[in-house]
Length: 192
Length: 209
Image (cartoon, rainbow over all chains, first blue to last red; front, side, top):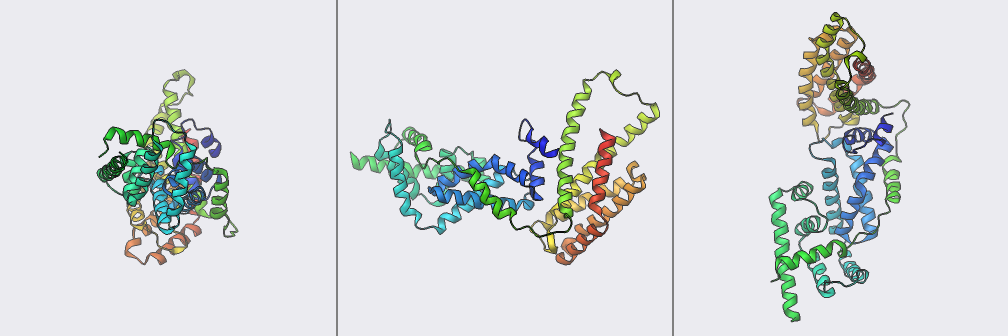
């Protein structure tokens, strides 16, 4: 009956605590319901960070294995989604530090994406240069930029996910933008 | 140096062009998660009391939500549709109602705390929070024992047992945590504490709704 009530809940938010309580004691249906709510966004973030489809799947799997194994430690002090994304960011960054070869693959992937998107108002060379400049950013700065400017996270969400103050998140994005403007400005100057 | 507007334009484009995520095979990933998380389940002859504690906690969360929804609905019902009660019954019900709600919340919070206790006598990372919560709940248990709900003998026995368990959890930091946790877990098992919480919750739910 409880599960039926969860399944038919109209807003999908008020029942999350019940789902978490059930999942914490090993209920598969509740765990699956939580997974369904958050997996797509975690996968998107993992892919944006690593740029490799297979690795993004592995990372998503690893994130949710960690989530369900440590659900007993979730105290509800932050939103469940924030807690999940904090794990996602940690898992993704750790994986990126371990997988050195990805740097080589990234160039191919970026090239492939240039072909996927037909040229419009954006100069393809500039687009490629932006991708390279983003990859060249330091990890903490890059992930803040990707989360904010590309995935649309708020600074509060980024702060909680990265374990930093909201103001620090703003500063990182500001820093990233300054570096990108410099790099892309240099590129445009060289070309002209 | 590039200007902000041009950079914004490029970043907006990057939302779809920079590593645009492929369609995620979420069902396949779930199968792998499920295999890893749920595959190795230790064989048990009887369900763990943690399962019951978690289920009770979840049921209470829902019970409170449903109760609130029902209460909101009741306000709009004409009085004539309600069952008539004697003045003595009304007085008795209205006097006990706040304590019953407190009792319900207390049982829910205690069930959550019991479910969160580290298994196998191993100290956990949240022991400090557990002890703080246990201290707060201990105060509530003592207040409830002196309240009208504590006059019922079965409720009183349950509250006294929970008082003991909460006192042990509250002292986790000052004891050897591993040993203390083993004792708490054994006490919970021996005294059938969790099934008794479940029975008490069911009783409260019937009297409430």
